[in-house]
Length: 133
Image (cartoon, rainbow, N blue to C red; front, top):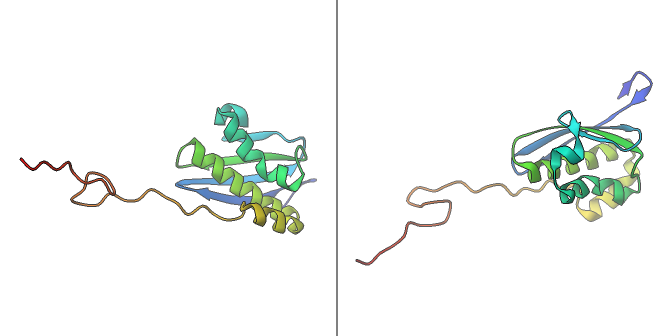
């Protein structure tokens, strides 16, 4: 997508109940999530590393700016959704990255979600406490 002189690539990422709309543009490597700096928004260094993983795999660290809008889920799910979105956007930027991203598993949407609570039980699988007397 051409935005004046600037080209931007888009990818949608999902993980658990989190959804991230991600745009990457050639730049200096800044990460902005929900209009806040990435490190400030995510809080933990582990989550910041998770978001940077697609760039490390494709050896494009510091070459793209990231703008992400997340909703739903928690911080960990949102970080995973951003990682998925960045991977899809990098694929749009250069289809040659597909084998590398696929091998590490960054293009696969993690399908695990919370299991629903069943009737007759306290939680999804935990039954009520049983007492003989």
